[in-house]
Length: 366
Image (tube, rainbow, N blue to C red; front, side):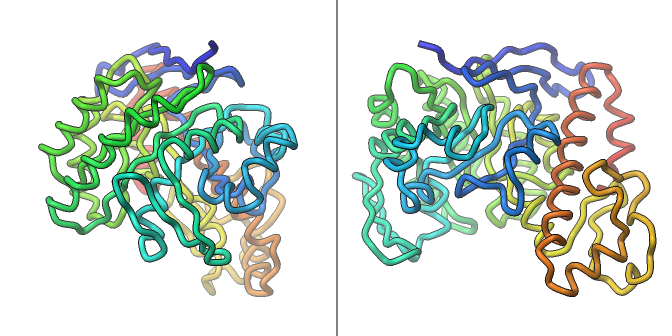
């Protein structure tokens, strides 16, 4: 049995931020870390070699989407997800729980599981905790997420409790379905209610998961509420396991969550915003389609220039988007993921070197 384990290296005396490592059969992940999202076994517009060259150590894919197309059986027959997408490092797979919320108009939820009506062709697809774990086993995921129910925002406290209690009902079923070699992370729900989050953290923390995630945030709530519920919940999560904040990706939200003790992040934001012609820089988010860049034979921010894209001017990138050339989205995606990789490197260095103030100053406008 070769399961995922967390190693705590240091706690920042100024903030409580954690510096650590996640040890997996496919390699070690230095934390705090950000995972690019490859929902359908691809980070849009990029290849695995691009992610390797940038330096990412782990990516995320999605159980629901891969089961619908091309199917976990096909991927298993082709050697598993790592071989299928030519990615040798760790892969975390989301269980399909987020789609319970995001595709709520196309599913029916019961205590037994979730009946989806495929967004591709309308066919029925019944996802249970057991089947979610089975699919992730066929994919060969490094880290499997338990099937949970993610409550939307806004929702009533009663609705948040129902989703939390259903998640608790499903948790033992996820664990019973896992194979000996599978690492499964539990998920803490509870909406925006501190008492529910405390109850969920206590319940999940007593179960033998290999790591723990906080779900149901960054689903439309105001930043102040988001920060408050993260700050309340993270200290309640087990200290000897990986702490993962699902779906959070704004640079300031990442820095805040790291201060609270989070180790792992994922978000579609850097690549989604790239496809909508937005670049992340130390001066803030730049709309490269703006008229001001039309004749600029330079980069939008001299402090955010990276090897993958430094040869291309702002004017050229604007032209690509105006002409609807796919290279524009690719270059913007490379830039944004390089920016996020540098952010996480800077965060780790700030914890290692007790230089948190310098980090905050550097990213104050990001």
